[in-house]
Image 1 (cartoon, helix red, strand yellow):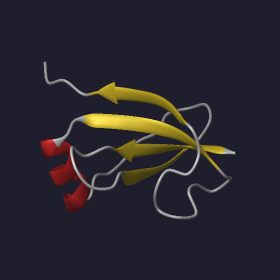
Image 2: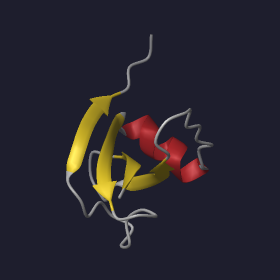
Image 3: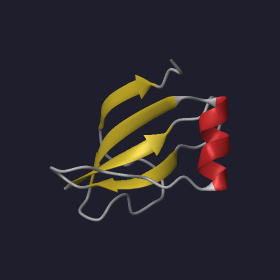
Length: 72
């Protein structure tokens, strides 16, 4: 199984930011679509997915953590 990071918009479907490797640092280069999604909703979630990530493009496993991003 793998962890997958998602942007959760106020409306519409979650947008995957990719599979998160266990251990180490995970860096994401945001696409224009991801930047736009984050500007309207600053909610991220992590789901537990089959190895390699969600086969459907949407979370299929349990949501393990949800957090909001805040600008300081």
